Image (cartoon, rainbow, N blue to C red):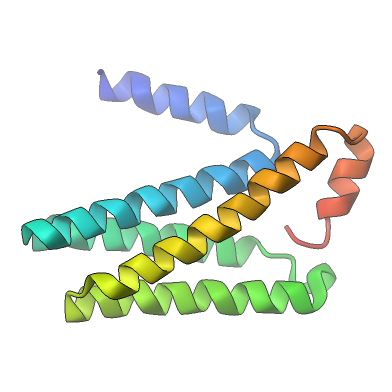
Length: 139
């Protein structure tokens, strides 16, 4: 596939996405990067592993920065701490060249993604204004 066509398709998808869909996309991107890091670790490809670890860290950092600290209360604080922990896990996995931390980070991200998937299903049944108001404290 043409990489430019793929990039254009992604850009269109991002521009048309609502906030929950954007968060889901970030989670999926982080999971994909961690999966790539795990495969690269198993294959002994340090360069690819580093690239995947960096991408996953950047995505998780972006998720962390998007949390609404002012309105999110204790949930926001806990979510930020969890993101920080995940970055620590994947960094340690890279340094120690161990899969265990990558697996844990992947499981945490998968669990959070499942939560956002449930929110998306619930949001689909809400009036538009109510859906945005419900999420205002989180992102």
